[in-house]
Image (tube, rainbow, N blue to C red):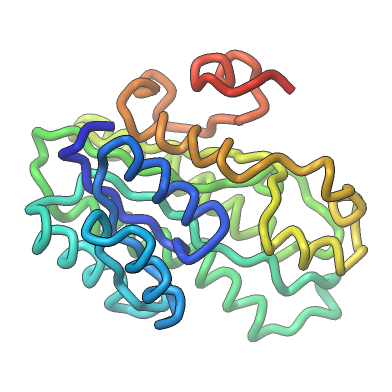
Length: 250
């Protein structure tokens, strides 16, 4: 990651999104942080100062992606990185017991919003310059879990969006990655533990990894050092990948 890099991060108010922002800034990068609340925006502005531009938008808003891109270009003249991180696990319920509005909202946040941000990102920028997208995926994209039908379906769609982006835009210097970040300690995990509906909810908090690990892995994917892995998903639990990133063994 160079000091000239400018990266959009969705869901940046807390958890992994905020950890990614800090990691990139510590490496000398610039960030455009998309958050929903004014409180989160104020907190991030105080913490990161001029190194970040804060865009207060719900990621499902039709103009959210364009607003984030415009903000980055206005401040630094370009945007060359995108992290589709915003996501929800709710509704946690078996299909027949789920709320349709919540189910559709999960698809909108976890899949439609990444599509919109990806589409806007691909439509701008210098086609000769290298640009990188990291979609925060999940093992749930590949393995159904009881009560997580909306989350699993949306993450499966996101995994295919990553592959489709790689197929269609690799020749235009776009490198797309899906990162399986493992089970790490965030507010979402508190929601999962409270549900008690499947084996993930029964993991003790002491078994969870710190969010700084997937943040570091995300920064590594954005740096250009892992372009040979582009076009599909990368698992943070893979020993070889962890060694490349400089993460401790599991």
